Amino acid sequence: MIQLDFHPSGRHFLQIPGPTPVPDRILRAMSYPTIDHRGPEFGALGRKVLADLKKIFKTEHPVIIYPASGTGAWEAALINTLSPDDRVLMFETGHFATLWRKMAQALGLEPEFLGLPGTEGWRRGVQADMIETHLRRDTGHAIKAVCVVHNETSTGVVSDIAAVRRAIDAAGHPALLLVDTISGLASADYRHDEWGVDVTVAGSQKGLMLPPGISFNALSPKAIAASANAQLPRSFWGWAEMLEANKTGYFPYTPSTNLLYGLSEALDMIQGEGLDNVFARHQRLAEATRRAVRAWGLQIQCADPAAYSPVLTGVMMPDGVDADAVRKVIYERFNMSLGQALGKIRGRMFRIGHLGDCNDLTLMATLAGCEMGLKLTGVKIAASGVAAALDFLAQS
Ligand code: PLP
Image 1 (tube, helix red, strand yellow):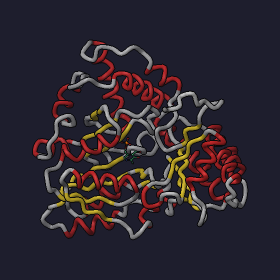
Image 2 (cartoon, rainbow, N blue to C red):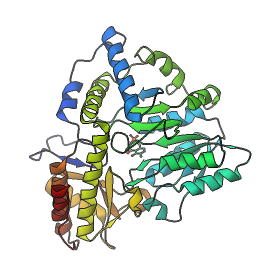
Image 3 (cartoon, rainbow, N blue to C red):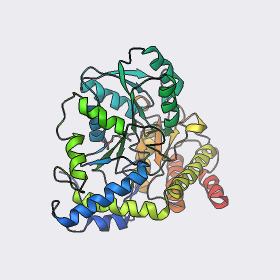
Image 4 (cartoon, rainbow, N blue to C red):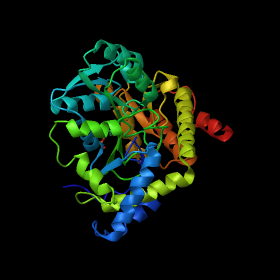
């Protein structure tokens, strides 16, 4: 039987890199009564969120909202633009890039997976020069899309999407550029139009501070044109019906009305704070976190300072320490969830999420929980990370 009466005192610290804590303001907005999704009020809500979302993606072009988690939006990006046996170039930055490739295979595409050897690629971002070299060799333009993850949630590494665009252009290659910023949107700088992205995939449960359940495809005119000829089967995910219905603020099937109330509120909150201020807040908290990790004498999973994620920090454990055992103690003693290491690096690090509705005090509590957990599990730390982070926050 599921135990539903577990209720430790105080708030749970949900410090995984998504889902993130949902602010009360959004929870309240989501509690409004569900309305007729074909009635007049709904059209106004639909038009508002579809217009405001464009500002977050930094695009003039349509953004589609799916009642699905990010995985659904991944699938939508592939099947709306590609045909069976199409070759796609993907880059191994971590667990999520690996899962997207697995999906491409399952859908009948031919992914080519570039990457650095072993787990080295899990500590760095996309190597745009490798993409350029690979595309230059494809003189017949058999590769139809380049797919990369912007903020690799499994490692805490951000990739330079503008550099990937430049690599595609330098190779004179017509492939579409598909980018997953499921955990980057509204936390890390992102520019769909300026970076020449054809499809951006994003989700609700990270920087947008919403519960899981809706996800997005931002499109380019080139992607919309490609969708007219793409041959992979699609029905629920098809862009054409969505784009038609969205013109008046409606959806071709029942939308997640209450999540859209929440989305409307989240967009108001982000625009109220100012998107640049939101990014700066994330950068500052990320820097404080890294200072704490360095003071503990531990390694940061991201080995390239230019690619540090403002969203999360991966903390590598010394040899012989099981990161999951540390996380378990922190969960049980301090009622705080940290992200577990996924895939190839399982058990070797844990992830601290510092995204969404977070501030100096929530971060300090998080770092205190980590420090106490490290001590309790006998991990040798060099100095207090809490003190190092406090010093930085007090000065900056
Ligand atoms: N891609 C990235 C970068 C992610 O972080 C996630 C989830 O955390 C996914 C894809 C999969 O999204 P979802 O779990 O919402 O289906």
